Amino acid sequence: MSVRDTIRSMVPTALLEWNRTRKKKQQRKILEQKRAAGAVWTREKLLAALKEAGVDAERDLLVHSAMSKIGYVEGGPATVVAALQDSLHPSSTLLMPTSPVVTLQAKHELALFDVASTPSKMGAITEYFRANVASHRSAHPLEPVAAYGPRAEAYTSLHHTDSTSYGTNSPWRKHMEHEGQILYIGTTLINSGTSLHAVEDAIGHEDFKFPIYLDHRKTFNVLLQGRTLSITSTVHNPVWSNKRECDGLIPLLETKGALKHVTVGEAPALLVDAAQMKSILLEEYALRGVTMYTPQGS
Image (cartoon, rainbow, N blue to C red; front, side):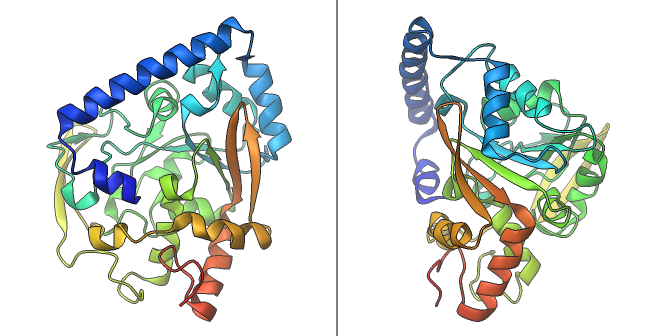
């Protein structure tokens, strides 16, 4: 979680809601002006943009997104999701993060995570995908992932059995192992760097050079297929969450060919080779101590 998210977690909920409403009104006004001027993104135009960006139809795609950054989209989130599906071959799987909260993990207080119905707080595109398209959603209460495609069940079915959100059974780790791509639409690693945590857990959080998890774990109630489960998980240490400099890794990943800057609609975007990113970061950690906390090495 970024410093901004940490600060936001300290602000009273009522004030946050007021500010969100204010921003949404401003954004709607801007988008309406774009629509009136004819600056409209259709399903076909977005598909062309995704192809030009380099989305590989034969590879699984994990998408982080900010709807407001794309511009005026005819049909809203449904159109974006449809274009993303169009960009992939039927043999590929589309994945999106669907975390039910935006607070620090240590302050996660959702009384019950209903896998089937608890909304995603990761943006309008992810919520539309979760509610209307995805065939599966993982049951981990902190970092659940929704998926659609032939590997959707394989990606999601065992996520809640891991002791962390990003372990060997998580969609985050499996997506890297399947050599998928990650697309950040209107967002960057500092806002949506969840896959970076999977790299940390691949090292082994017990052996990691910084105490990124708290010593104590938290237990959450999860409703899965009519049964209420008690899921215990590690939670991030908020002290180290405040020290993340995820975007400092972008030059390294770009130089080594794992990341490129692209555009989707009007949104600046990043397209990342997940397996290559993992390989680079593991090597750089071993050689120079590179992490999201020390992107220049230590």
